[in-house]
Image 1 (cartoon, rainbow, N blue to C red):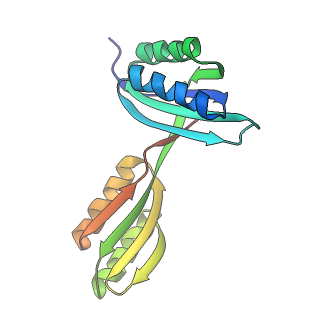
Image 2 (cartoon, one colour):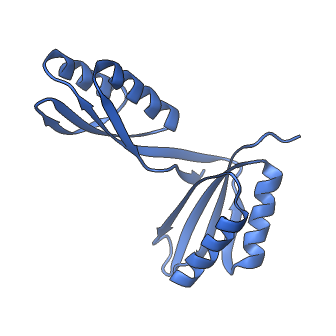
Length: 158
């Protein structure tokens, strides 16, 4: 039996509110295991690329893709063989003195970009795989109180 894992369906639809609403309704009704959904317009004039990531079996993801094609006027709906994912996080750590330099070094190790450095607080941005962001937050939490605000997964066929 197929083990559930992240599956990406890339859907090209008309960039208009009615098309977005129809797709949203199909996702709401049929997309069990929804991990993320993102919409980007501008790839082609008048079209929007919607990427849906589901934690499911390949068979169920293919059934969802076929259902989308049947229920919505789509230009293209593809179940990706390979895809890249990332997540954006804004991280804040409360530190002072020597701990601040250790936090800056930890942020650099995780490829974070320092956005603000105030007395007693650092704010940084990092874009990476979710598990690497978890590792960065864990390392910062060992230095001082740390929090992170994250986007959902952003995924692209490729």
